[in-house]
Image (tube, rainbow, N blue to C red):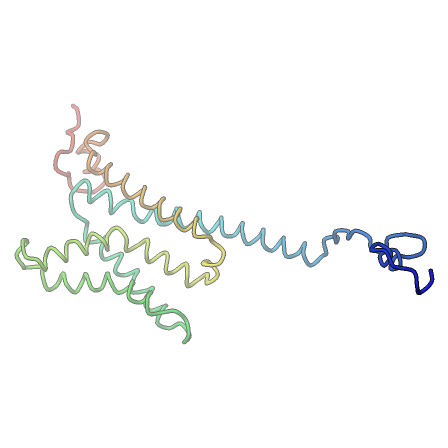
Length: 222
């Protein structure tokens, strides 16, 4: 083609192509999985399994801790003093562990949560002879209910977070809500079992176990 001849629109295209018309670019092929990616997948699977196991342990531990206080609240309308002092002792022990943690650890929120049983104990000293209809006495009673039902599970939660700091990363928010939901279901069910204890327990059952007979219990048939 001479310099004087016009160039058609598709001629620059043809000029840029190789002489044989072959394509110069091939479709990319997927890269094979490397040993590093396989190892990372195994670590992620192990972490997921560990999260499932620790979630199960927490649910069982919290359920065991919460059922008896909820049952006594339903059956007797109150908590036993040994339950409350057990919660207080566990919270103080966990509080000491929190306070001796290295600086930089998140301690303020946990310390405040663990101080609630001690606050209840101090207020109980101040209101033991107060009028039951007094506002302060009512607040102490409500605080005692919170401490009695939620004190031990909250203490277990704080201890798990201290023993296993990666717990927050290894368990999803869905599982956290599942843990809370399971414990609440156990607490409500135990409370209702206490309320309706006369339907499946007798007064003798409470006496043999070393407990006082709750109001409305069913006498044993002769």
